[in-house]
Amino acid sequence: MLLRPVILLCTIILACCFSGCSEKSDPKIGSKVYVGKTGDTYRIFKDGEPLYIKGAAGEATQMELLRDIGGNTIRFYDTLQLQSNLDSAMKHGLSVIVDIPLPRYNEKYNVYASERIKNDIYKEVEFLVLKYKDHPALLYWMLGNEVLYPDSYFNSSAEEFISFYNSLIDLIHEIDSDHPVSTAVSSVSKKRIIKIATHSSELDFLSINIFGNLKRMQKELDKIKLIWNGPYLISEWGDEGPWEVKTTKWGSPIEPTSEKKAERIAERYTEQIKQLGDRCMGNLVFYWGRKHERTHTWFSLFDEKGRKSQMVYHLNDLFEQRETVSGEAPKIGYMLIDGKGAEENMVLKPGALLNAAIYYEADDCDRIEISWEILPEAWDHVRYDKEDKPDDLNHLITASYDNQAVIKTPDREGPYRLFCYVTHENGSFSSANTPFFVIKDN
Image 1 (cartoon, rainbow, N blue to C red):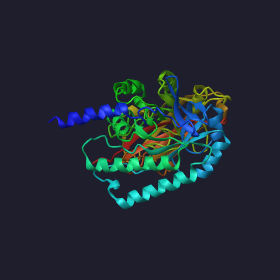
Image 2 (image 1 turned 90 degrees about the vertical axis):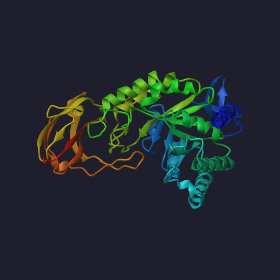
Image 3 (image 1 turned 60 degrees about the vertical axis):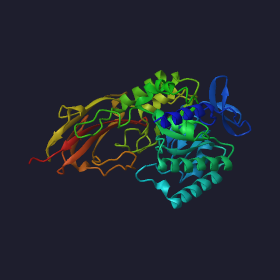
Image 4 (image 1 turned 30 degrees about the vertical axis):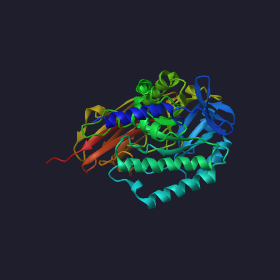
């Protein structure tokens, strides 16, 4: 009966003794990039100079703009065009965090039980690091994004994963002694962070993806301070994710307007991120480019034509820009369908004609354009699965004028969303959407 507490106590004692992501006591000062301390403050040092990371996670797009709003770093998830992306980042004075993709750990369907798969992964990591380790834009390696590092202590498949994962850390350090290695965890999972700190201590620091829980982040980290008190980076942040908000009765998350999201990221940066202590080495806003995650507008800072959301204008102020990006996006107040809002659980009949309206404010309304789009919504969505924007049903938009549109509901049962986009000739856009459900009478 005493075995588990004894092992846990030993783990805690060892955690306090570990270097690595617990607390790097011997930084590689001769390296191009390393984690070090100035007084009590952790920083990433690049070419001997401390760097507080301000940037974005996403795609290799509009990097000149990212620099102009005060950004200094970009995180790339896709390695297919990595050479050109690194070159472009260097041209615009940005450092690059390179994700090394890994399959997510799953106890029931453990791909890491296969020697063949592990061998393939090992060779791919080796090839990637060897090829790009000397690129001057490289800042650090992100070994897996939310790989669901196991937090259990008595599990053979977990031990198998951890052993292999640690071999990859060792491989990267052996090939490239000039750049740190981190991994990105989802939110502040205390058990997972403790497990990583004690069992993969050769990581140089932790990276944390966090959204709605950002307001509780410092308090949660303080709870494990005696076990892990090392440096970290906020590797993704933004407004609440679709998994954190109110939903309709059929489970569709209710997306805030782009104006509301912009207001909240400004508030979070000022009141939460800037107040984090000396262990935080910087932050990356999510998502620089376009990404479909439940909707194509939820996290995307740009639309398909590269127009800027209000979030970009706010980042210009938050990052204490070198050059001012002037203008702003239209301010959407709310959207109604037949006088009802998104939280009113609209269940509709097929073929019904409805009146939609968008209410907004903008300078110089003669330069405004309003467009509408109807999209089906994934009914069987599974988190972490890749998502693509579905084909539109815009033939069901029968008329549009001023700030209004007439739509016809689809014949097929299921969940849908009506989107509205308000664009300005200054290169900005705003968006709002309303979910609805079509059901046939029995």
